[in-house]
Length: 152
Image (tube, rainbow, N blue to C red; front, top):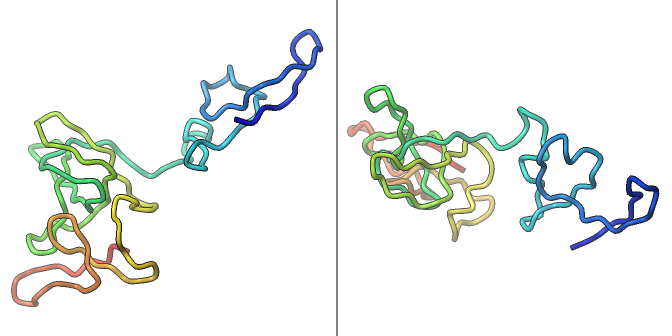
């Protein structure tokens, strides 16, 4: 980890470690360092700036990389895998596998990179498929009520 030289309260030069997360005012004037992923931690950003996400209850099992549908279950917002045949439109995606147990929650991301999906071709257009997956074609038939939704 990189270090820097700073003056302490007594005017002496000391080695300091930069911070990768912020505890608030206690970290004022400290030098910032990127985290292990090469990004700034959300705690270092001003309020209102950061990932566009929300934590919601998991109504059906979801896997890392799934595109998910948000729905109302008796007044409680829950998620389930998005599916173009049901149709459950994709509202976001998850980056972790979560088993629905009635209380489990997952972070749903509304923008950014869905790095839970692997093996895709950069620059290719992808559409919602079944069970939270995506494909390079809109797998729908006009007479079934399926949806064609671009997801990337």
